Amino acid sequence: MQPPFRAATLVFLALSAPSGVSAQAGPSVPPAAFAQPVRAGYADLVDQILAAPVIVDATIRTAARIKGAEAATVAPGFTRFYVAADVGALVRGTGGLPARIGYLVDMAPGADGRIVKLKDLRVLLFARRVAASEDQLQLVGRDGQREWSPIRDSQVRGIVRELIAADAPPVITGIGSAFHVPGALPGEGETQIFLTTADNRPVSLSVLRRPGERPRWSVALSEIVDEAAAPPPPNTLLWYRLTCALPATLPDRATATLSASDADAAREDYRFVIEGLGPCGRTDNAG
Image 1: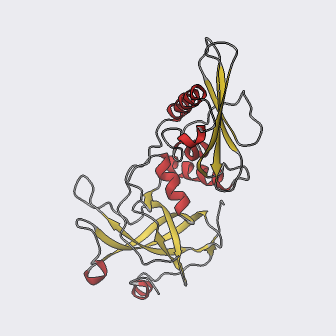
Image 2: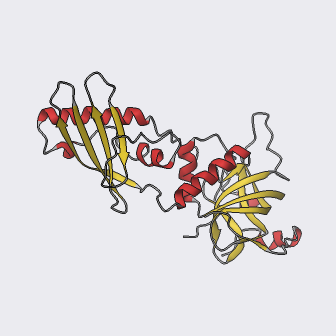
Image 3: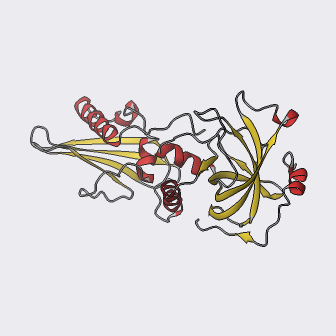
């Protein structure tokens, strides 16, 4: 099924392209309403990239306002547009794209009460392909169109590179088991917490405590634990995989085989890791 206004738009916008565009990195549903871009953190951006099989750097050439029945589902205060945009680069995706594409976007007015001027606006599009319409895209969320900036472009490309890397950290699905070994001195001990992953790759957290020293924790992505390893920096894919997936507290089943004192120590060490990771920062604005 072709998206609304496809035929009419092809006529009046005279969409034509000499060649397609190939990627530089890296179930069809009806078009829906999408809000203008809002501020979002790293976790929101990764969520959006993961949801978008296609990411495009494009420049808007025309934006036709849609009225009547085709705009019946638009939220109050929003205006729907059919946008034609020239593709500058395919940041994520395979198979290439025509040099000009079309999509629907719903826009809300800004603080000044006006809708941002779309013509000639450079944007990053987070989208999926429309079946049987190679020049049509569907945005994947209400932030599916974001205004382009050098910083945002660099961040998106960096996340895409991390996602497609051979050593990309796996998806964390939960906590398996935890162990604690007390040391010979008071306050000394080591906790190891084994995580479960979508592809069964090993991931574990280690916390080392020594008397008179601040506790240290690290994450291992193999069977080998490197005591010299550091925690993952914020706003990296490994940090995202951990902080946005791990529960706030250590599940009781993870310490079921431990003594009461060892279980308490493991829970305390897990809290230390969670505090070190900090909040995921995911909001409701990027869905």
